[in-house]
Amino acid sequence: MAKAKKQKKVRKIPMRKDLLTNEMKPKKEMVRIVRDPDGIISIDPTGKKSGRGAYVSLAPDAIAAAKKGRYIEKALAGNVTENFYDELYAYVDHRKARVELFGPDA
Image (cartoon, rainbow, N blue to C red):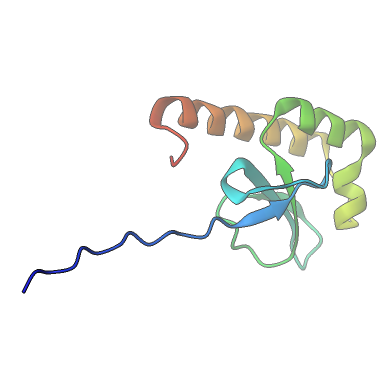
C-alpha cells in the first residue's frame, strides 16, 4: 500500500487596514501603534499590547503624511509627541534593514 503525500497547509495571511490609505495589507508590512489604557501612545512591535491600535504602512513617506495630517492622534484620540515620530522613523528604518538582510519573514 503506497502512502499518500501530505499536502502543504496554506496559511492564512493576517490582513490589516492601513490608517492612511484604507487599503488592506499583510500585517507584517505594517506597524501597530497603540494607545494603552493610561493614554500613552507607543509603537507595538509584537502586536499584543492591550489598548486601542491602528496600523500604518512601513513607508517613511506614509509616516510623514500621518504626522502632517495628525492621523494617528485622530484615530487614537490622544496626544503624540515629537519624540514619538522620531522613534517611529527609527523603527521603520530598522524593519526595512531587517527585511533587506534576512528577507520578508524576518
